[in-house]
Amino acid sequence: MAETKAPDSTRRSERSRRAIYDAALALVAEVGYAKTTIEGIAARAGVGKQTIYRWWPSKAAVLLEAFLDLGRQANEALGGDADSEIPDTGDLEADLKFVLRATVDEMTDPKFEAPSRALAAEGVVNPELGARFVEQLLEPQLQLYAKRLAAAQEAGQVRAGIDLRIALELFTGPLAHRWLLRTQPLSHAYADRLVEYALYGLAPR
Amino acid sequence: MAETKAPDSTRRSERSRRAIYDAALALVAEVGYAKTTIEGIAARAGVGKQTIYRWWPSKAAVLLEAFLDLGRQANEALGGDADSEIPDTGDLEADLKFVLRATVDEMTDPKFEAPSRALAAEGVVNPELGARFVEQLLEPQLQLYAKRLAAAQEAGQVRAGIDLRIALELFTGPLAHRWLLRTQPLSHAYADRLVEYALYGLAPR
Image 1 (cartoon, each protein chain N blue to C red):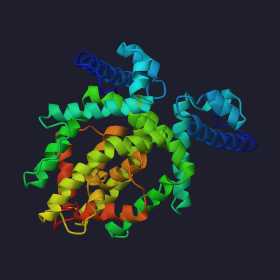
Image 2: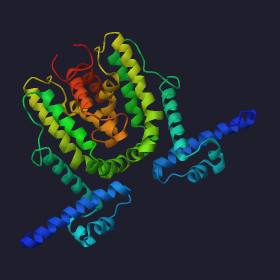
Image 3: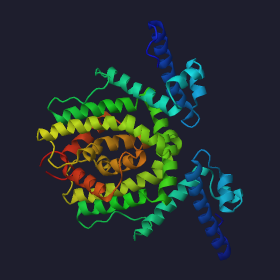
Image 4: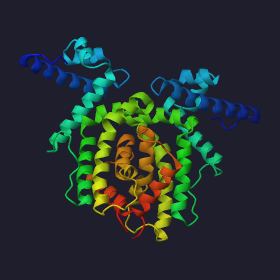
């Protein structure tokens, strides 16, 4: 983006940017990743395709930014700031349940669900897009769990020696798996059980 | 299938069936589910498309049976019988590690991986196919874990009151998630950690 634009131009740019994100997410949800084109996004957003090419090099780049923006909106709707961290009240179990319940709500929100499924499905069979999806969208979210678990480990609430990058998958993995493959319904009760089982284990204590 | 065929005809049928399975799996891996057709499978298998329509009502039906057959072959290659159960040596941790390591091997075997990804990706965005995939392929495999965990619960190695259908997701969910989205590499060491963390929990004992 040019840095010398007048305020009016900036407002117009912001409106166009928002229209492009919305169009990209709606289109990928309707026709899938493969059939989504820059031309289709431009037509739906009511902008020229040169406007899109000026800001993004490819449809993958537009979509990834549209998803990042959607994630920021979801965080703000939850009352957090745009790059919300996982709360640390000192009670790991309560904090994880809070975030996992919010994740269930997001996963079952049609605004989020349809475009996310389209992007995830493409990532499953398209390693290049999958890698960008993981690096730019998924891994930064997972690292928030790693950070919260590190604080808990420091506080003696997670065993020393536990690999936190694996540990976080004990609750995020099942949730994503159930959502992606629709094996069983998602619910707050399910989110709670995952956190309890992951923290205290299946074996008797 | 007609039940009155002569042995020669049965052998020919068996060869055709195998050729159709192989063609269906190869094709879906190469072009994806949407572009796989009965005509394409027939051409590649060297049979008439009427042969396929005589045995299966749709490409989804052919593919699901081809995957069931692939699963049986994998079980046999592991030294089990076709519908292998999870071993019960009395040591839950060792039995789960054994099976999860074998699952890692299967997931990273190109013969299994490419067609499985194509089918899973389609299931993510196609609820009807996804439901058949879960009901016929995935859930029966997950129920083997439920059964093994039930025996362990009976033996006092899993806490009373634990929901076993959720419990099994603590190790199968992360494995599938890591495989589907390629977040991190799959390895035997990773499978072992998942089992240990799920059984003993993240919190200090």
